[in-house]
Each structure stands twice: as C-alpha cells, then as structure tokens.
Length: 133
Image 1: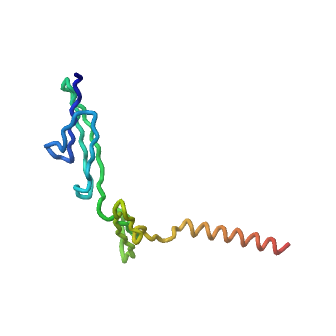
Image 2: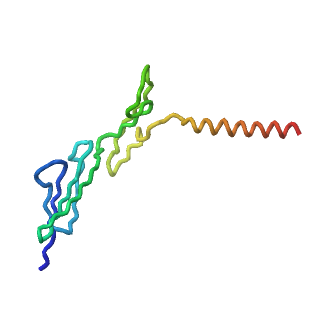
C-alpha cells in the first residue's frame, strides 16, 4: 500500500490546525465564520519520509455589506468641507439578488466632459465651415 502525504491546514496564527487530512483532498473553507478583514491560510504538507512543504496564502474576507465612498480616497490630504457619497449594500444570498442599493451612483468623470466638449466643438467647427461655403 502506498503511503500518502499528510496535509495540515492552519488559519491565521493558530497553533492548532483547522484540519488534518491525507492527500489528495477537497476542502471547503467557510468564510462566513471569519470576521471581515485580512487573514492567512497556511498549508503544511508532510510526506511519508518526513519532509515538509509550506504554502502561505494571504486573503481578505468581505462577507459584510460592501461600502463604497466617493469624495475621498485612502491616505488623502484634505481640508475644508468634503461632500461625501457613501453607499453600503449586501450581496443577498444565492437565491435572491438585492437590486435596491446594489449599485453605487457615481458622478460623471471629467474625461467624459472633456470628450463631449471636444466632439461638440469639432461638430460646431464643421457646421460653421459648411455654412460658409
């Protein structure tokens, strides 16, 4: 009989493994039991001869409602009064999609206004040039 590698799965800085399995394995990590934020999944594999392999995977859990904000960016230097637009929305579940509040309204970007003014100016130039003929 062939000996198989043993896989230990650790979450964050826990000393005790979340699971101890024999390879190959399918494992489901339920992120609903984790708090929102940054986490680390550490997988240690030990082959039958005793050699160990290590893989560390950082990930971020965001099960709670998503929060979008317009009007300020991270690490911004600001002063005065800031108009902010804040939207928070949940994902619903697999059976129901929440339409209300699932999209964040945003202001029109400045490059769109520049394009509109440029195209309007170009059209006006050709209209005046055509009428003068």
